[in-house]
Length: 333
Ligand code: SF4
Ligand code: MG
Image (tube, rainbow, N blue to C red; front, side, top):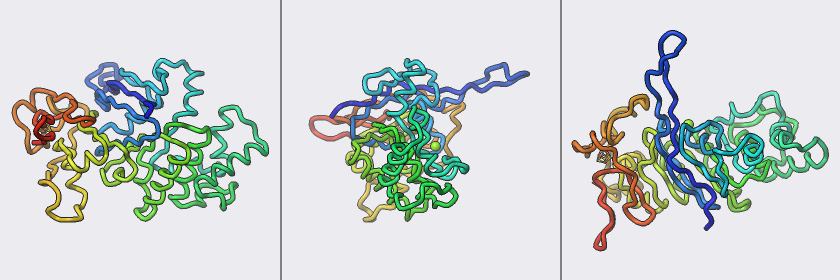
């Protein structure tokens, strides 16, 4: 498999200002605080965390819809953060995003035809039979071909609107798509349809996804690997099967405890989350998770645990995780 995306030590701090004319910087929101991962072509990395964990910000930074404070993003051998405007625009066609809110993401005054054609027009295509044919082809790809392209978004259901958003994202033949909670706003009965559609499109078009979600249930089927974020950092990343079978970080285990287990007693000891996610403005010292972790020891409050490989392809950021040895696999606290 060929690496298509490499993200290294990505940081986004939003300054907080106070005083007259908001001239004094009094702190910063550490929205993304040193995130690194790689993605191979055709793969789906599920990026999971509670709201405020920095997952959407990470998605936007990777696409450079937001300028990072520091870090690097390599896409297909290009340094995304160093590209000048014209080259970035060309690259944008190859990297797309699907938004969470299919109601807010579409312009209510534009027809489906105009909505799906827009990225093509921006990239220099002209109205004409060819463009109409391309839009038709895109609507077919997402299962909307039987609807009139001159209808407006309000005439469609949430699931159909998300299909329109997907057709639009596919218009420029992207290779990589950030799916930012694409099913979170949809009825449960519709969610599987959209996830299946994304999966079919991935196979058909060879797409690579960064699939953002707030719980581990949603990404279980579509992901090849899964990363868990907490307060701006990845705390665990592993192949999908490994992560669900052998979660090591207490936070991952807490998130998994929230998913109903089909066979009671089959899972490991449950970790129940206490309290709320602390503010990213002044995140806790040491391990960001220590204020909610049932296993926290003194070291956790003082020393920030690095994300380290504890088994092949399996990384965790916790002082109490024991790396794999010749005798036994890695162990969590
Ligand atoms: Fe819990 Fe400490 Fe591990 Fe952080 S480092 S997850 S506080 S045991
Ligand atoms: Mg979000």
